[in-house]
Length: 241
Image (cartoon, rainbow, N blue to C red; front, side, top):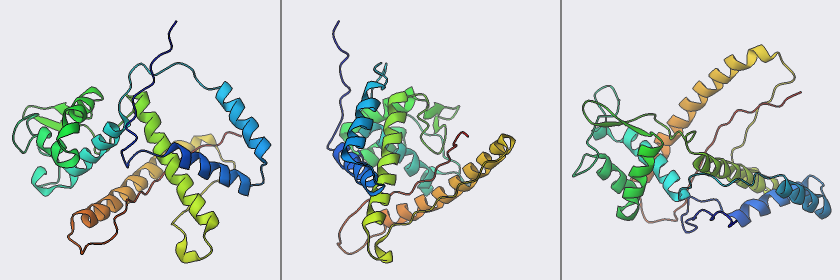
C-alpha cells in the first residue's frame, strides 16, 4: 500500500510558521526550565510514536488559509464595503468590483485569487443571500477544515513561543513583548460556561480594536522605514484536576 501524499506547503509565504524556528524556541524554553537534552529527545520520540497517522482527507495550501482570513478582515474594515450600520454589503461573486473576486484580488493578488475564493466557499466562509454574497462570520472559521485548523493552531503556538523566547532572553524591560495570563485555582465546573462566554466577548472586542489599529498602520502612508508584521492573540484553556 502506498503512503498518502504529503500536503503541498507554500514555504515562501511570510505567514507560515518556520518549523525550525518554532522547535528551536520550544527547546530553548525547555532548557530554561531545567530539562536535559536526553529528557527532550525522549519526549519528542514518545510524541512521534503516539501521533495520529491518518492523513487529512482534504489538504489546502496553508497560505490560502491565512489569505482567506485577511480577506474577511478587509471586508469588515473597508467603509465602501459596509452599509450605513457597519454590516458587510452583499456583492456578486465574480467580475469587476465591488465583488468577492475584486476584494480577494486586492488582498492576495491574481495568482491566489481563484484558490482563496474556492476555499471560502468550501468552508462556508461566505454565503449567498438574495442580493449577492456576504461573509458568514467576521473571523475565519476553520472548524470545517481540520487541516486549516491545524495550521491556525501552529501559527498561534509559534507566536506564543516567539514572545516567550524573546522575553526570557531580554535583559531590559523595554525589550520585552507584551505578555499576560490569568489562571484560576480549582473552581466549580458549573462556572466555566459563563466565564468562557465573557472571555470570548471581551477577547473579540479587544482583538477587533487592535485589528483596526494595525490595519490603519498598514494603510497610512509613512516615510520609508523598516517593515515588520505584528500579531496579538487571546486564548482560553482548561486544565483538568
